[in-house]
Length: 350
Image 1 (cartoon, helix red, strand yellow):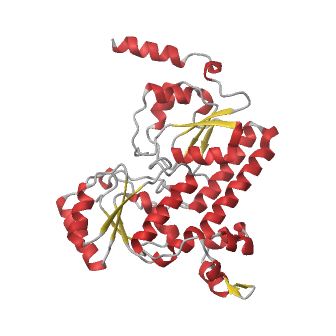
Image 2 (cartoon, helix red, strand yellow; image 1 turned 90 degrees about the vertical axis):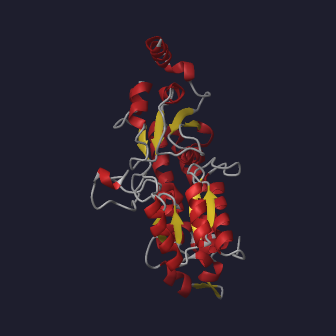
Image 3 (cartoon, rainbow, N blue to C red; image 1 turned 180 degrees about the horizontal axis):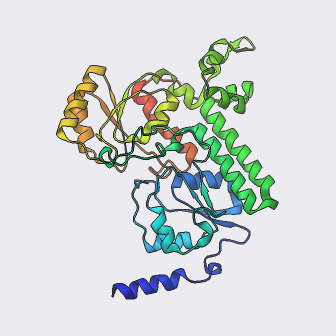
């Protein structure tokens, strides 16, 4: 019976690609996650049809390569992945999909982590340390500056596939980056200083000095800062505990020191001893926020909160994690709104 089902699956996957063709004039894309899919849609616009493999409420580390997911990969002309070994399940899925055009090393296989500076690079590789990512923390999309860079990778990839539409892709990217910059810095500051300049400064040691010393029309740029950064500015320096390393890039960008993780090692369930030690760390450091996401268990965070007086924030960390997170911009809006409201109930909004 299993062999019959396998043969039926292989016969379906062997059908001509035209059977699964995208709408006329559109390039069919498969993205590993909803976040990658959202970024590709922003740049590709009406010229692409995008499907994602992982849903926004699923853990992107773990995915079973099912026949339906293999079909999505089989009919794609190009695949976009987050990279940094986030998708360890991707290799067997692509083997089953039998689509040589999107295999690693081929033009249709695009790694969005290219050019991104990873956090949490391990000092050693040992299975005793849990599910360590050898190339660094893969949750790169939770830093808006990384997404800025990722859109460039998408634009270049789509332009290679459809060179006649390169101007359209460039225009789509420019429009999205403008919206991203205004959401991150606030429209007033973007108009005064320019998004590219702000992005370069934010990623440098000169950012705080720039805000303190730069003046336009008699107003300091620190007073012009709005958007997500302005909203989160009162929360800078607020220590948090997270369930997994999911929030590393978000915490880095918005200045939230991570005091510890509920997992003693990546992918390893918390032990009673670890929870006891973490309770002491939280009490001593007056840590009041526990960050988790929609696909982790809630019992241990709840017990930690009861012992320490902290508040548990279960946040979406991918597009589609909640009903309102329909794209990347609404995802970051939801995350910053919830966290700033928990840390500083009267934090400014723009």
